[in-house]
Image 1: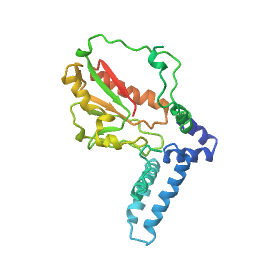
Image 2 (image 1 turned 180 degrees about the vertical axis):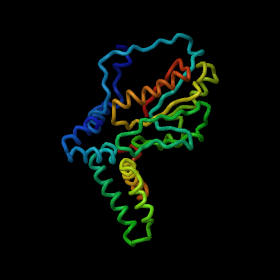
Image 3 (image 1 turned 60 degrees about the vertical axis):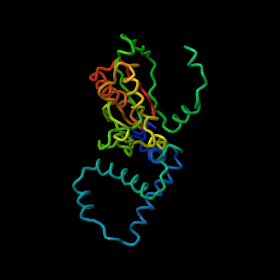
Image 4 (image 1 turned 120 degrees about the vertical axis):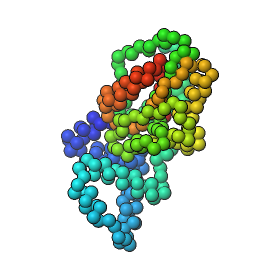
Length: 96
Length: 165
């Protein structure tokens, strides 16, 4: 799914196409796998916070306030893959 | 068309798979680009290698494998390096074999041997690598490809060996 397709979807406010792009990216071209990967990363994030461990809120707030939106969006993608990797269920080995 | 192009494709489904998964991402060319002919014997020619394998020297900035649009940078890989000095930052292709012997995806030792044996004249100072997940065909063609082409010319390559991962 190319950038022109993505830009067209943004222009038309076509949410279905946009989220399909994200799913295909996270699922290495497999939309259903990508959907599961998104769920998995949120579950991993949730599991880490269930016991309300101490977290570095100063770092979080400082990052959100001082970094540009593009870097934060990029970080969001990094966090997804980071959480997936930490889960131990890594599908991104090209064997889909 | 020569006989070799009539051979059965090993993975005939691959193009339909690519088009289904990444519609619009293929670069299609209508214009004919003639191949350049070698002007000197192979044994006197300087060869470079350009690969989409995501191989890079250990310690260099990892390729951005998470960006939704792709990474349009490339890495120079000094051609004298040995496999332990290289690592792979790439998703979407199996790297199990390559992590055991990087030559299966980035045959740097085989190329070094070709130079040592005099089959080719020499290798360029650097070989080149980037990642294949690039969803902006224009940027791929007009930025990344041209950047690599410039670097290849600066390294005085007579021949370029291109290999997708």
